[in-house]
Amino acid sequence: MEGLHLSEKANHSWTVLEFYSGIGAMRYSLLKSGIPCTVLEAFDINDKANDVYEYNFGHRPYQGNIQTLTASELDKYGASVWLLSPPCQPYTRQGLQKDSSDARAASFLRILELIPHMINAPLVLFVENVVGFETSDTHKQMMDIFAKTGFVWQEYILSPLQFGIPYSRPRYFCLAKREPLSFQNPSCNNQLFWTPCPFQEHEHTCADDDYKSNEQAKNSNLSCQPIENYLETKTYCSNLLERAESDLVGDGCVSPYQVPLSLIERWGSAMDIVYPDSKRCCCFTKSYYRYVKGTGSLLATAQNKPHLKKGEISSLEELGLRYFTPREVANLHSLPKEFQFPQHINLRQQYALLGNSLSVGVVSPLLCYLFQEPS
Image 1 (cartoon, rainbow, N blue to C red):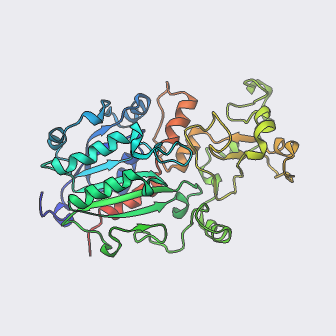
Image 2: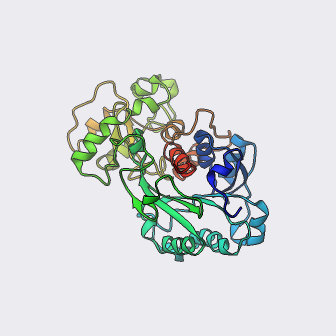
Image 3: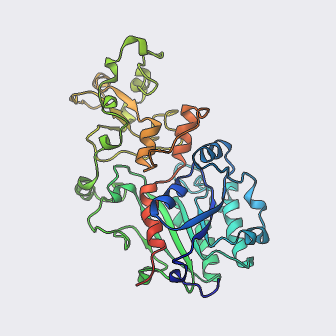
């Protein structure tokens, strides 16, 4: 494959290895991008995630320990593209931030270390992780390997908000190509970008409010779609408290998605509350539905917005607060309508798997840019 250019592959299907495949959001991103490709194998150690992947794609990912893979074994695939979304726990702000000393970082480093020893090393790499990865020791080791093996790269911190999706989920992305392959905008090589992005069509896109001033965030969020566009049905926007008593499921809840009064009384001041017409909601983590504080937004379903007084629980009770459903979280991840969970995956498992997933609405245009031919 030496000397191969993107234009020479125009009539061929790229061959892909998908590491840390999860519930399949990376593969859906590939499908949405329209890039001609064949996924040769997916890899993930999570049994439940593999159940979901298999249910949607008809293929069960390799579930062994990828740290045991050798250069010769990877060579046999002959894959030209590697897509990687390794565990984020070593780098997340809520974690212990053990970085490369965290056991969960080992498999990613092991895969990268095999590249210099391969005969059929990948031509294209795509890496996704949490904000904070870009300052990690793991990142430094990745850059060292890229430099030694002839890769050029571009890095981005992006959120769905920048693509008109009302979902604040900033993530780190690295796009890398092995020379002589090159980017559409080579002047951006070996740099980290926040905004603007060379692959985005519009200059005035939403900025993530975690990284912009209040005024900038307020103005930029005007171009985002309202949350109601991502809700399951209009019924869910009505007050759940008006449901019939026969719908009661315990603890005074009319639905498994209604927030119990006991949680409102305890954590009301810490809740992030949004409305159907809001143009931003917080990132949903894998602990959503198990915990309230810092795990994602709650939706106010009352027909009329009560006048909220800070710290007044009775005002919060009037909002008809509920959790976003798994389907709605999937919508905010831009997962297609055909994506489904198999029946045996329970509600908490669905939220946990979605919390570990990625945004198709961000990754798909990134992949389009990655495979774009230089002008």
